[in-house]
Length: 422
Image 1 (cartoon, rainbow, N blue to C red):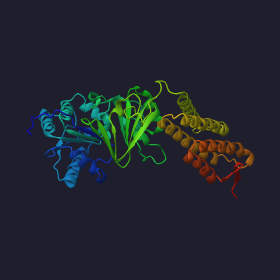
Image 2 (image 1 turned 30 degrees about the vertical axis):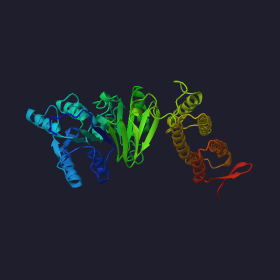
Image 3 (image 1 turned 135 degrees about the vertical axis):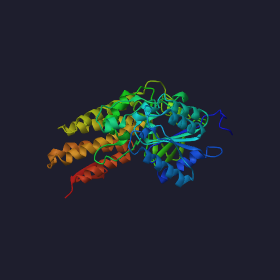
Image 4 (image 1 turned 180 degrees about the horizontal axis):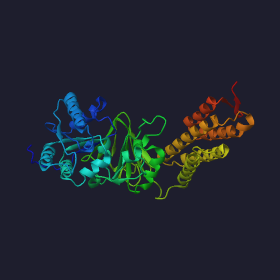
């Protein structure tokens, strides 16, 4: 096939959470390459890291990686800066992209990539190659830049700017997808502080999520994990060590590695609506059911109570009362077959709230039985309600947390008794 031939079907877009040049991710590249008929012609775009003094070193590592793992020569289509590029350099990069059937870009700054790629002849050619059947692989910063909305990671995480989105490249918009792409979804580098959700942590992530239009789907990709979007087959395949999370309007659905799902899930108004009815029952109406609405309200209360409690004095008995209300709402929601994603969200809120409660009680100096008795009795009530709704893991978490604080539970035919360990 000559270079002027125009395949009628689009290629694929692979989005990696991280690890783009590591041994574990080589299987992802091989899977993408298996879609290519004839010789693989790979090209690396250096733009996302074009501002860095070690940009050429990053490119050299990519060349060495492709040579070592696949025996392929990786060309560098250098376009470090829109303003600094000479005409000859730009034309050379365009020529390399036109001949490539595998185009790869990775680390750097998402906002820098957007500023230099959006509307440029370089990325217009990349989009054209995708429509003609080429396969694109983007990781980390480059993956973030591909969304309809792009996260300014460094500006927020390193500089302290307010959480916000900027207009992204919207690579997949022409294919009906309105995405905010968030690799490093499960990042844990912070150690003592929360760096999940692309280093944002939960408080900032909630602000960011609230700023997105209701029509936008957040595509969260765990580290060392890839989502391969086959635009011809309209299918997304998950590979790697973790999972891919689709989230819209506070409701999320996760897909583990070695599974595939229809890309309709990324664009349907209700997450999972593209699945067969037997897998995801159709909602009886467009309005949420009363148990679902009540559960959402209890989740909101818990967030408000425990988020506001950070670093301040708060009534632990009142807080436990809110947790009991949440446990009851979870039970009602489960009996009403409310979507599992919402129940999972409630479980995570309760788990975090219990952890916060345990830390505060541990440091509160409540040594006398009269001080802790109301708290323990409320927790026993919460645990009983969780057991009734078969939330065994959360119920065990309460028992274990109390045990770590020197409070032992004993389940009897008459009910649960408790006492201090000696």
